[in-house]
Length: 112
Image (cartoon, rainbow, N blue to C red; front, side, top):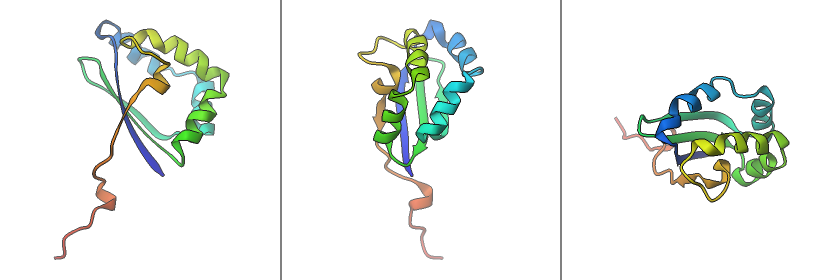
């Protein structure tokens, strides 16, 4: 499984509405994410608008391509775009991916 962590920045004046929208994600969007292989997906929000996302997928390129083929994703991205500071592409392609440098389950433990 590929672990993906990413950053985006929301407009501070839109945080409450963004949170409300994510309390009621469209069921067809949730189904599309699952079909595309987005697993264990979480979003974390700092009060200044910093959005951190995390998900796992067998193959990021394939998961993105699968979502690109979903009409519901195009509609969702259009709906969500105004919440972000100006982006050059839809949020699901504009995020800044972070490099994973440590994972507890993959770390060697010291001998007792």
